Image 1 (tube, helix red, strand yellow):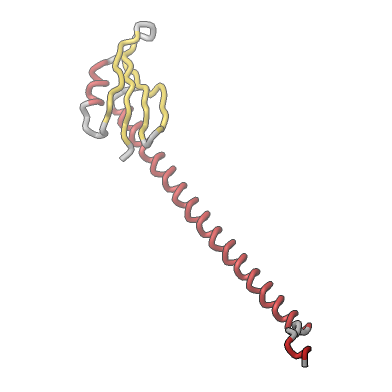
Image 2: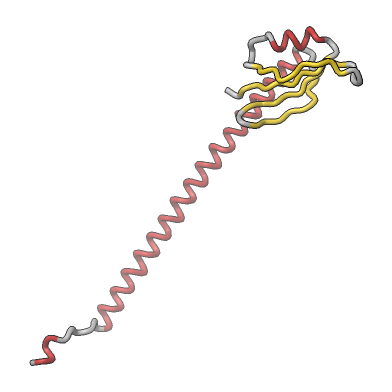
Length: 129
């Protein structure tokens, strides 16, 4: 009767069933985790593409406005949700009309006349609303 208190080990079929359940559970969890990550990546990509599309459309609109005011776009960058423009024109009035147009919120960084190029040069920032 001393041997009756000893814990009996699992028999082989029960142990096999236990490992089978564990491996199926881990497989299901890894599949669900992979599927969930794929959805996140897909959603992020769509958002990323739509942001680029929005910025591209905004840039096209800015270029059309510059063309309407007969301004030359010499440099362009996009930082901190703002377009940074370097614009030039022979006619200073065209630059002033662009600044006063109220089409965009324009922050003038500098407005100078370049003797070498014989042009007026505007450096400005346009907020991307």
